[in-house]
Picture 1 (cartoon, one colour):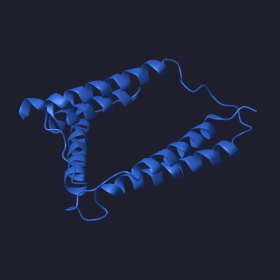
Picture 2 (cartoon, one colour):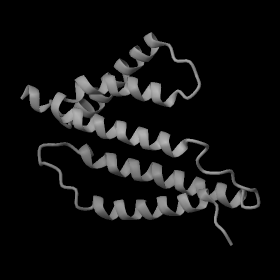
Picture 3 (tube, helix red, strand yellow):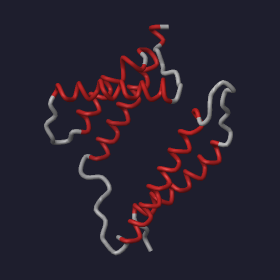
Picture 4 (tube, helix red, strand yellow):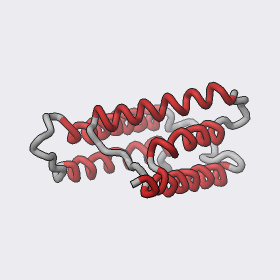
Amino acid sequence: MKMRRDTVTGIVGLLGCAFFLFMTQSIRQPAKLLEPGPRLLPYVAIALIAMSSVALLIQGYKDRAKEEKPYFPKGGVGKVTKSYLMLVVYAAAMTFLGFLITTPFATFAFIYDLKGVSKVKVVPAIIISILVTAGLYAMFVYGFQVKLPAGSLFE
């Protein structure tokens, strides 16, 4: 019997959650930080991934008689490869230029990359890029108390 993609993804997700739950036991927190501090984020992420994995398992079981469509539409492998390379360039640029300079440009580039055949207006895309950057900055710096890369050119 061939398993559906949803079922396989759900199983892999649950196995990954078990592994990461085991690995989070080694996270140590500085004495100055109040609980839950940075230890909470991995547990929240694990819970969300586990819930999504269970939902995929249920969906795969419900749709087991339906025929699956191909995983990648025509040209899909190229699009995924392009997106991955964009992430690599973003990570490399962040080490030199820092989070605040590279993230708005990266977000704008990802918006255009993910638009497909849809039209994207430039001004709303710029505003969204700036708001996403500000939100991520606030979340990590103030919420999680994590220092973001400043960039080696500015140190």
